[in-house]
Length: 121
Image (cartoon, rainbow, N blue to C red):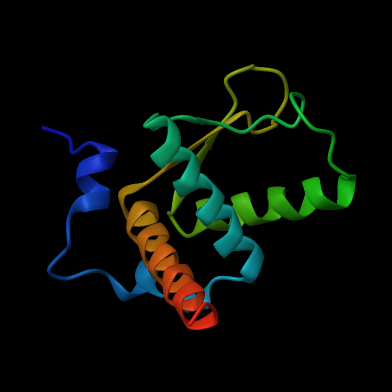
């Protein structure tokens, strides 16, 4: 039986691969992208997260390019899957975190929480 994303988020793995848990090896943009994705997942509880530039706010092309690069690199690392549910071209309309991506996102959330506590002492 496949694990649900909530199960993956809540579990504490006994041994995690260093390749993926090295959140320090990610760029700030990649960390921010994962952080936004995990917050979206926690809010919606949907494993398939809509990520469509055609809807909602209009972002500058430079921001779109930066996020697209981050998504591509995170996919190359095996942390997420990019999907095109619209079927028009090669744009990303939805993103799904992998099990490894959920673990790394959890590490990033812990880092952010420690930073917040340090700043707000």
